[in-house]
Structure formats: C-alpha cells, structure tokens
Length: 74
Image (cartoon, rainbow, N blue to C red; front, side, top):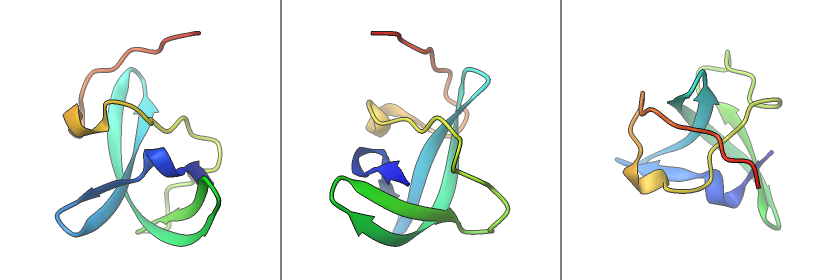
C-alpha cells in the first residue's frame, strides 16, 4: 500500500519513486486496488517488494530516476 500522492503517471505507465541511498529510484508498478487515500500496487516485474520501502510523495514532477534526494524530519 502506498499513499495516492505517491503514484506517478508518465508515458502511459504508472510508477512510484522509492528512496534508495539518497537517490530517487523510479519503479514501474501495477495498481491492484484503491482504498480511500491508499493504493495497493505491485512492481511490474514482480521482483521488487514495495511493502517496507520509503516512497516519495512530494516534488514528484521534478524527479527523474536517479535524482539526488535528502530526507527531512518534521
């Protein structure tokens, strides 16, 4: 499950960005179902487990695969 805000649609495909070692990694996903403000997704190749990953939810339009990111604590 990821927040709806994490879903990125580009070139007729659906993705989420995952934080990996201060880098934004773009993962193609398939939407399984939606529940309120959460979306159940699965990586398209089935090999990437998104259940315990930190997905990005802001500034997504400015990110590309491999973008440098920093974590902010509120």
